[in-house]
Image (cartoon, rainbow, N blue to C red; front, side, top):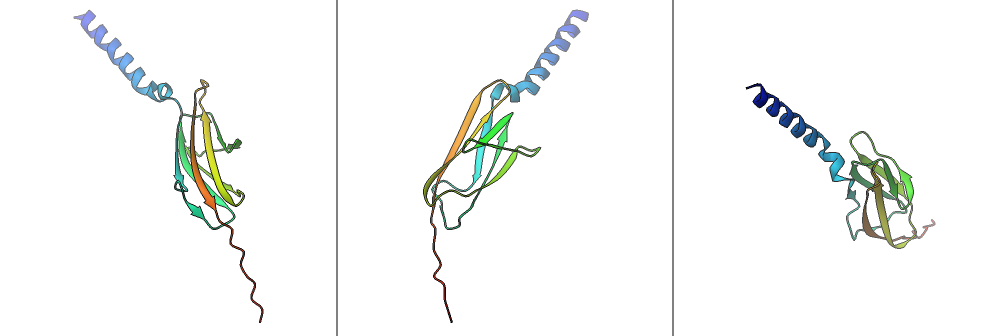
Length: 116
């Protein structure tokens, strides 16, 4: 009877360890929530938003970015007018990498000053 209880306890511990370690086994995950792919934006700045989990380092267009405790990130960019690809890349503490990108078009409208 003691052997059976010991075996069950070991199985429970191993199962719990695998359950808690699943995030470490998955590697980094990135989801870009804004802007939508293929968006046309008429402002000079673009707010990049998303969620990154299981990461130790995050970059947006090869510049360091930061997440809050829940893994959400927000970065204001000022890309040049025209077609732009925004790339978000992450690395976990084991060196595994993941990346996501979204393509957008920046349209600069020059307002005509009105006098009078």
